[in-house]
Image (tube, rainbow, N blue to C red; front, side, top):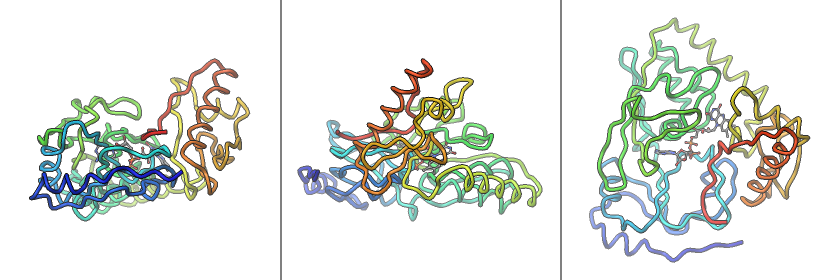
Length: 307
Ligand SMILES: Cc1cc2nc3c(=O)[nH]c(=O)nc-3n(C[C@H](O)[C@H](O)[C@H](O)COP(=O)(O)OP(=O)(O)OC[C@H]3O[C@@H](n4cnc5c(N)ncnc54)[C@H](O)[C@@H]3O)c2cc1C
């Protein structure tokens, strides 16, 4: 299925003469996500910096839908693509990380792994869990990303972001309204940076912990596949993978999508899956788990765009 949206970039450029970032029409989102599926973005905007992002959002017609992506490690893009604007923060403008005392500052496009490395280089412990999460700081703020006993909410001091009207906001830890794998901050906020606090720790202990995190990943998760990580949230007091396994779904296939044999809360694009295959497989798993256990699984992965 080939989807093409009307090109509105000339109108946007005309309405925003001072825009410095890049506006591209009909850009394939499959290239920007781990699953490698889905249709295009009507417009893909890469802001030059925070002021450029604010200028863009302020002047963007209200009726246009806006969605921000990180590195797409938690996204299924549907095959009909994303009407409106998709924003992607480039590492060159939003990817800086630095450490001072027990605080790490990071741009929203910095990889979580880089945050862990920056912390480790400054003897700051408590951020080793970031080492194994393949997303960006922006994605971690939105998802309250966590692993190996730590999560974003444990270390966040504050985050900054730009609202749909171009206004800059600062959110303290409590303002982020973090819950398990989510934040309650208005979904229209585009996070641009964050500050995290750890604790000064012995460098060898930090490195050992990061190695542990990495080894656990390599042995327990299909991290080299086209996947989106954990598909469903763990129900309270239970594990999604155990329920999926008990419902007989390990290895289940729909088209080119398959439930991972290695970790059955991971779905995989085996090569030629569509967004529809992956979402249908996920829904099939949900139904089977419901039938087998009476428990309803909830998606952790975000599904975006038109079917
Ligand atoms: C192999 C693998 C292993 C994984 N393991 C883990 C794990 O252990 N723990 C875990 O928590 N997750 C895990 N994930 C899921 C994923 O890495 C996290 O959810 C990550 O935080 C997503 O970051 P991202 O930059 O890829 O965001 P995306 O997938 O691009 O987007 C996810 C959400 O974040 C929002 N978002 C992204 N950037 C911004 C921004 N700048 N401002 C506002 N919102 C933004 C998007 O709009 C979307 O709602 C794994 C994924 C894979 C593929």
